[in-house]
Image (cartoon, rainbow, N blue to C red; front, side):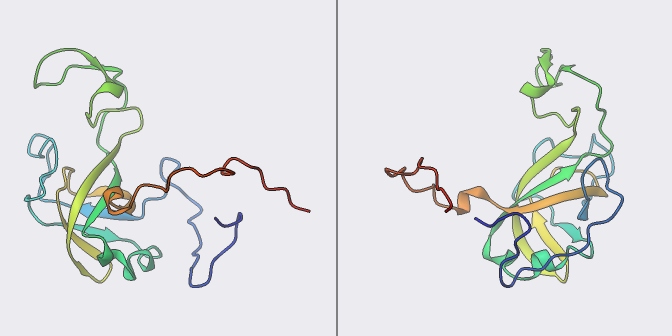
Length: 167
């Protein structure tokens, strides 16, 4: 663990834009074949079309070294065309009314989407992936290695809860 504002050897920091979108910084844009929500698949398919994930400068160095080490990535994105005002919804699949937080609808107070995708290649600062379910032009929030690539944490050991006291 690092201390606040500490930078480890080999890390690089960039200036964060003064203006932020929705309290977040869009780090890229996703390009898919879908321009209408009715065309877009309800869940991404790992055998779906190859889509392009463009990473903006200054964030491009974040994908240059090591992204290929993960065959699968989790993308987080801002569903910028979604309504944000529904608390109860009735998914078309069954007609029952449910609370927004109990379903995976893109209509949410903070419309953040996520997909686990298969990385098929990289062209400079653009990733080629399969498995997306968002509209063309969707703003990208973050890219993470798929959590299944990581082993579970080691079992708890005696002393794990002891507080370190600096002298």
